[in-house]
Image (cartoon, rainbow over all chains, first blue to last red; front, side, top):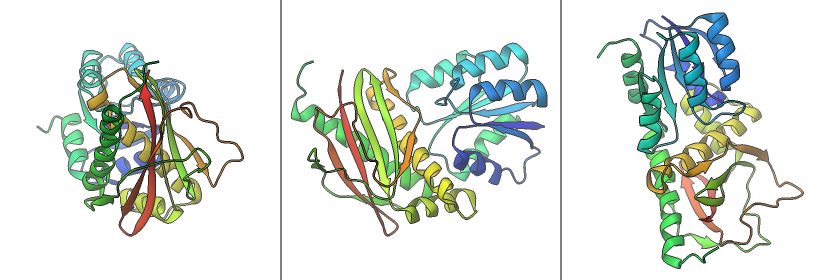
Length: 120
Length: 158
């Protein structure tokens, strides 16, 4: 499956990349804001996305809404520092497959990848 | 604006202490220690080499930042990514740490506690006028894995 990583932190992008070993996920791109992410959904046609919320240019929730219009079947895992219940529920309401609160450790990421790949 | 009580300020400060300690313990599996917070004098910047700062708006206003030496953020970068950090990478790491510490406080302060994207800088800026300069600002001394840093919290109710 093709994965797009969207986070304005390069550290977070590389952390996610690092822990993909053992998963059938091919990274087709990384984006540091929602606008770039939408362009990459059109050009790279990813199957799934890890998506931050607090980003410049376009936030993750707005990006999620627009991604779903472009490709309704796209699987989106929100990975955010915004740890309130409202944000998690809003993400699910807008079509996210799941959400993960930062800070993340490798076990958290494994659960997120399992969810994206329907392993659980 | 209503004046904040000492209890309100203390509890807000405690949320940031808890968030900071959780960040290091959960993400790195190495506990951090914090010392007793103290009030920052306006003329003191409380800055180290690298700083990641978040502006607060919504039901609160002000800012929070974490400031530490390059080595601490470089070590965090390597811990997460497995690669050596450039100076830009260490700055990026400072921004991400500040983002997570501030974002996690929404669990206590609610969805209307709005955080900005991180602002990162190296060294001491010539001018540092911050929203919230007229409210008490707490410095939380922090130690993680042999590195000393500060979390600085200037947050009040809006």
